[in-house]
Image (cartoon, rainbow, N blue to C red; front, side):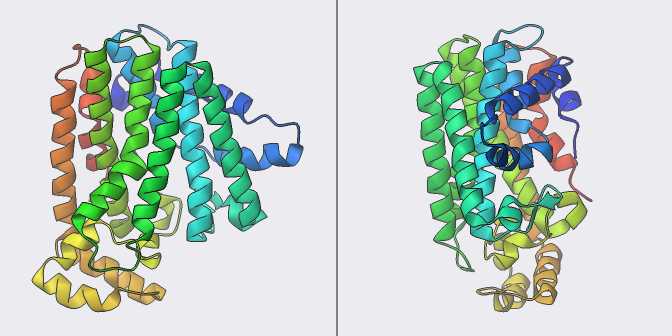
Length: 327
């Protein structure tokens, strides 16, 4: 796991993210103690806070100096609340038992509570966005819609070894990259950047989001439960066949050895064999190479932004995420 503050070369980021934590705590405050506990469950479990960090870094690149403004901090908190709400809903659909090393909300309190708590987080995010202006509110609402479209796209190809790479990238762009892109755009919007820079950081956020998701998918194939904070190979068990698996399937040996293992529920033994075949048949290396190309796209986009150490850190973030993968 990389240190985001070091990777982005932003000395104020640690303090700014502490302010985001305070904003998150204030946002989930509820009169009902039970709702407050459930809504704060995953927030209390921590996380990289990459999305708020992107909002803060984007603002720093395009004009803000020193500590992030209150608007940028609140914008970053709104994006993180959307991310958290989507995780609550994802865990219900996946019947997940753990998340970030703790018991998932649905496993602890049931699906109905998890769904309602996820809705509550989305509502709080929308409330914050509305306070930042109509453009931010509209952007966040559209992004929530894109997250739903990405999830539906994924559901339509569950347990399909014939899932196309185009379908995979549609899902990645909508379900993951759109929120990171929105984080960058909100940071730039709230800081009053010009339109060219706003559009550029949006493009940059999309590329970083794609790299992040491919890296996460690779980690599901090569990582451990401890590294993931959830069971390794979970995507395979759920029938979500990601880029390293699709690339392995496209090879002669991978197609012959891997395809018979896919297409339905699998035992832990079959899951582990599928992970091993995906590694042995070059699926992981091919997926990382594709992610590198998107990391290069992020660097190119960053090259159109005002120069500085934060710009350079954000430009190299995609490669840093990939370099942090287990050897």
